[in-house]
Image 1: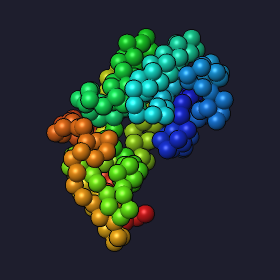
Image 2 (image 1 turned 180 degrees about the horizontal axis):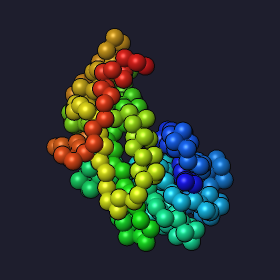
Image 3 (image 1 turned 120 degrees about the horizontal axis):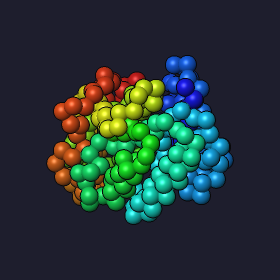
Image 4 (image 1 turned 180 degrees about the vertical axis):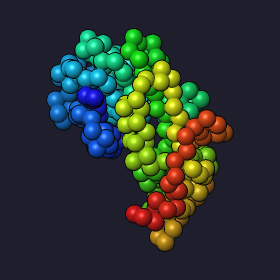
Length: 242
């Protein structure tokens, strides 16, 4: 199959590699390759003759501007894909986005999903829990010297490689016209993840339920539902391998 992957970041590059390894004709597209989802520049060429389009793009901000980003980008992508006769669109989203209306970025991701569902193209939505690679950046938002403040928000981390594999699998198969949830095998609170991450260093993690982006999340909103597919990589093993 010919598959156009929109987004060439952490996930997109791995999705392309997985699909090429599986024997598909997959190409990554982004602003660096001349494709701009907000203006539509280069989009028609990117999806021309594609059997499947994979959207792994991300908003550059997590604030209210992310709503406009996804509204415009998804509308432009769906229009180009429909014009090109694309038969399947795969969208990467996040477990629990519709359960956290307090967070603008999650409202934006919910809007993205809703636009894809309302479109005319058969679709698959892959919802993943938080990437293991994002734990350190998340910690950096609330770090002051050697002290890291983190809330006790339950998290079920997964590797980006496992997410990319699930997205590639969805792209290579028939449309779900529904949602597949994927998650790592273990549940931690975010402050626990922080302590595991800083083991052997001078940094100290302090529990602060007002700190950072995830402070607004209540309960187990970010944990995978019962029907989720669980992957095999444990966070402690992943950290040790780095």
